[in-house]
Image (cartoon, rainbow, N blue to C red; front, side, top):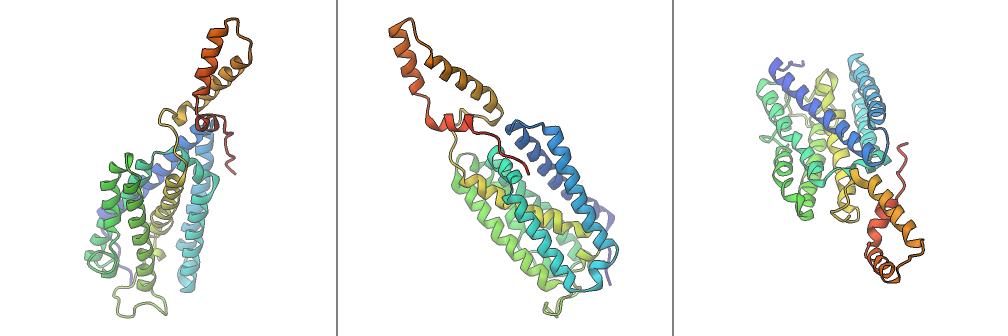
Length: 290
């Protein structure tokens, strides 16, 4: 028997979900601008796809299809996690990894702190089992705290970003393990009361595609950002187009004959100081979205 949570805790939960979705779409907007695409059009397209994705999951939950056969929960979880991983590895995920600051990508995982506070409240209300919070086997609250604490340090230290990323990913794997064994499955923990029934009811089921899936995609994108080559700090994504134009005009000018041999020599010497990394960065063609 499922015991609904209080209205105030559900409101906070939906607020956390809204922050996750907004942060993702904001990253899409930033990535589209850096790729010299229309940010409004790209964000609307991604928003439509996300809405369709969530609506499909909501229909499966609301119709009772998911609850009719216990094994379907595992299938849905696998599909959601697979979709989140594909998002992180996709060209769109690459846009976010190349355009968003590492500190913001790490701070994104901070939503897990208030989410765990909500889950702890639901344990006290009898909505979910005690295994799903820090008094049981779920210590994901540490990932949110680590992300928020290490995000400022990650502006100047990749080690801090790697630490927050690894801590969060390991704890996310543990969340999946605890959730599976706390659910009403034949191989689950039999002494867990009540069973974890959130995936079978709305809006609680959003915790899987939005929160868990969002955390997984975020870790993959952050990892890609940490593995990307270092870009000179003078090169900003939003200035890529203007800098590319300037570089192209400069290269064109270097091919024109100079009337002043001394001045021309100085100009050629100055142009030789432009690093190859900057040329590659500015002249790189935008990657396709699909």
